[in-house]
Length: 389
Image 1 (cartoon, rainbow, N blue to C red):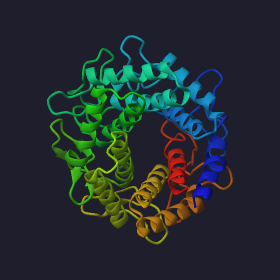
Image 2 (cartoon, rainbow, N blue to C red):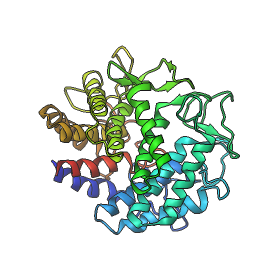
Image 3 (cartoon, helix red, strand yellow):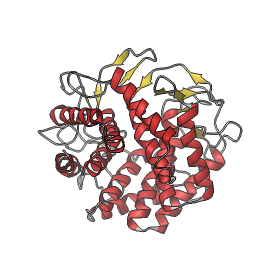
Image 4 (cartoon, rainbow, N blue to C red):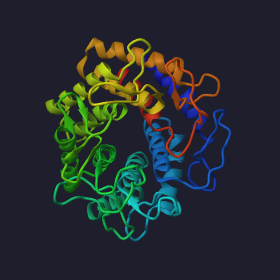
């Protein structure tokens, strides 16, 4: 299976994306139609630009050194056009967009750190590392909650935490609340940064974030709260199977970064997260994970979204590798069979964004947009192949 997955990474995913996405005028083009023809692209979004920088750096580190040039291309737009030279914070867009206002978001900072940390390691770039360090310092000043721990989502450009504003922020979180989503990607980013910068304060924050997932967001049935109040009081809502299986492998990755590969609590949580998703959010007949359900275990959305399938693939590969249990290997094979048959576009390459129960693409099937880069699927293929080798 690992050779199939590795071949698919380069043939079905990276070949359509690179070099087509590389914009000579700066950054990565974000919007592509189903056939990979370019769509109008007005701005550059921090999450997309950081994700493409990360995958380029990760692939270069894996031995395909031609991708180092793409990683450096990403570093340039992040540092030159998206990071505030005075504060170190990253903007949502290359220019402040009226729709999002001029707030700075912890989610955006997390991905900038993730991309720059990977580039710093692969390219041996002090400049990229310094950019990531400055973003971490910004998070500490403007987003960290000194009373309850964790991070508030949004802040003003001047560094004032936004807690009482009406409405929701750029990722849909009501102001003043904390989201599992943002904390998950901070966990991911801090682990990546700690590997190249073993700073004591960064370690403390990474340890705190791991405890947050093992304790504060944890539900004994085997899933995670999606939103909480500032003091970690849970807010009722749906169960995101995609985020939960993603959390499973990212929690184990964070423990690894901390030198705690044998962390029994984190392994237990990861196993129970995946087991719950397999029990209530998995298509036993055809393979693939459904998008979301209720806390009572009922399905709310039977869509099979590309990023959920990717994170499910890597979570299953991780547990198959860590535990050696045949049931994870069997589910992994079924998951890969679904992806091969229905999520990957055999005609044009790339992954279909969303498909129905029969594997038919839904909507316009756009291959690239601000939230759809080569990150979820690229990482899943790259790391799953490595784990299975």
